[in-house]
Image 1: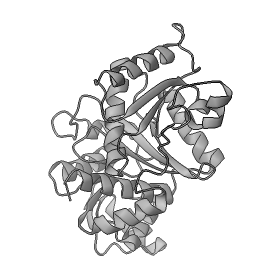
Image 2: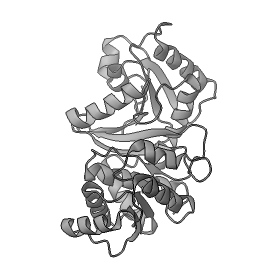
Image 3: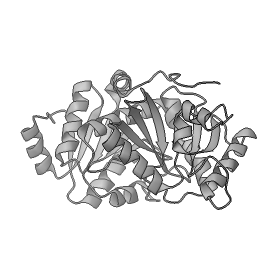
Image 4: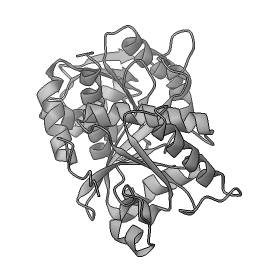
Amino acid sequence: MDCVENRTRIRNMDALLDEAERLGSRARIAVACAHDREVLKAVGRAQAHGIGRFDLVGEEAAIRTLARELGVCVAGCEIHDAPGEEQGAAKAVELVASGRAHVLLKGFLDSGVFLRAVLNRECGLREQAMISHTVLMEMPAAGRMYYLTDAAMAIKPSLEEKALMVTNALQVTHALGLENPVVAVLAESEKVNPKMEATVHAQELVAMNRDGRLPGCRVGGPYALDNAVSVHAAQHKNMDDPLAGNADILLAPDLAAGNILYKGLMYFAGARAAGVVVGTRAPVVLNSRADTDETKLNAMALGVVMAHARGMI
């Protein structure tokens, strides 16, 4: 069995932060609606790590007041006064679209408003037909990291969209030094059932991978979650698939499953996470407003590493 564990040079979030610190001195991060405590705390932590310079977009008075209260120095930041969510999102996107900034970070605003600005056909950041979200998760119990897609954007992806989601996720794994990862196509069961669309999609994605239409990875499935991540579980079920239990990328069947798995691992299992939107001209960090400053910091670090891999910085 070809076990893929620990092939990547970045094996945990601390290593990701170290890599971003090494690369990030020239990175510039635009923050949409930065007038929020957790956002500014993350900015302060990023500054302490030497991860990037910042364009803080939002309500200038609130940004300065909160920064003083939190002890976050914004003297080296450029603050752009933009009242309202729509103006804040549009200005931050403009900074990235113009090349002035390299990474876009969602601050304290509605995700729908933020994504409308990102995907605006005239002045947004759309680059590819399929825009999807990949989240990197460090699992303490497993002692390793997994990549999960999609937990934020693709509601009910078709077979073709799932293939594009895998291709997008590969941009993240390759940026972090993980080549030829194992993609586990998740479903209700490890057996193909015509009444279970996710199992049929898995079978077809495996075939696409085998005949070269989905390169850069190894695709296995359908897998229930247990036999995607546990060799023991796969062996107990008498599975002879050499990829079973060795997942790097977890491909969720739909947004509901992906989002619930993501938040379940965060809140119940203590996972550390960093997510990024792929398929755009620059890395887009799409956090929940409820995410902690640590999660926002991790995601900024991932965005910086992604921007470097793309030759932007």
